[in-house]
Amino acid sequence: MKLSYLWRGLPGHPLHPPLTDATIGAYTVATVLAFLCQIGVSEGNCTKGWWLALIVGLIVTGPTALTGFLDWLTISWGTPLWRTATLHLASMLTATTFFLIAALAGHDDYVAGSVSGGSFTLTLIGFAFLTLGGWLGGAVVFVHGMRVLSLVDEPTARAVSPAPSPEKEEAEGG
Ligand code: HEM
Image (cartoon, rainbow, N blue to C red):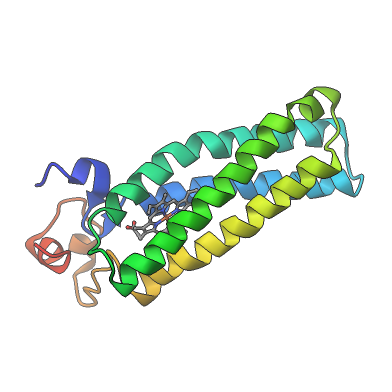
């Protein structure tokens, strides 16, 4: 049992991916609500929902970015994996910046109960970078195979067990 499991997660169960689900989910809700406000499905409630979803996304981005960054530090610099992961980092930081500006500048919209065109545009740009970053994150995992153990014949009981078996530790690189 290594101390780094506390911030990197267990072999086969890294911490970053489940956190990304919460973050991407919150920003997706914000984007969908901003769109619904724009097409007039609802006004006040959906504006409140848009802004609150942005705030939830920004809060969850903290641990998400931190766990991703701690994994990124373990990658050998200058390798193709490092380049893909660094592009992922850049895209996610850009997305976060746009969502942050949308939330700060959009607080007046939240109070007024109406999403302005500017706030909607900022949210859409943030979502575009989030999508690009998700694509790049997928390449990091599913193309380069980062943190994937590929223990195809691992018995189910050991595969789902939180106990880091010797096979899992070895597959993760000792
Ligand atoms: C808004 C913040 C972020 C989001 C939403 C996000 C999202 C993702 C996604 C979707 C994946 C693919 C894994 C999966 O499909 O579950 C991934 C993998 C990864 N991301 Fe991020 N990411 C974020 C921030 C960062 C940051 C700042 C870094 C630092 C470089 C980073 C580094 C990594 C690494 C190294 C992986 C490979 C899998 C792992 O090590 O857990 N991410 N990310």
